[in-house]
Image 1 (cartoon, rainbow, N blue to C red):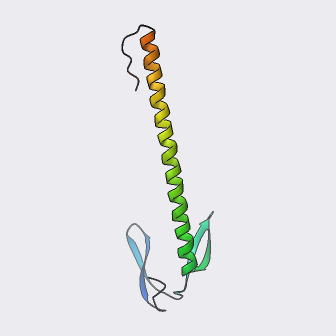
Image 2 (image 1 turned 45 degrees about the vertical axis):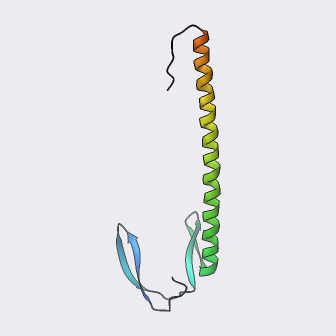
Image 3 (image 1 turned 90 degrees about the vertical axis):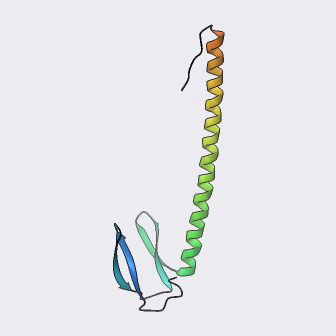
Length: 99
């Protein structure tokens, strides 16, 4: 990785659409990391790794939260569907398909 690389090591830097430019690493101990709103700051490799791991953990927590909310909505929808079908039967109507 970058941390173990020496100065002036040649690298390929992605510039999008599967294209790269050749570059030489000037400072293997620091990276530029985005902190939001288009702002980037320089940090040590270790600090950057720590920040990125925290971001990944936060994203995982958010994913779990959204999954739980989705499951609650699905359960509520199933409850509403059962209630509507029950009401339709009580009103004497035929089978009701609720999509």
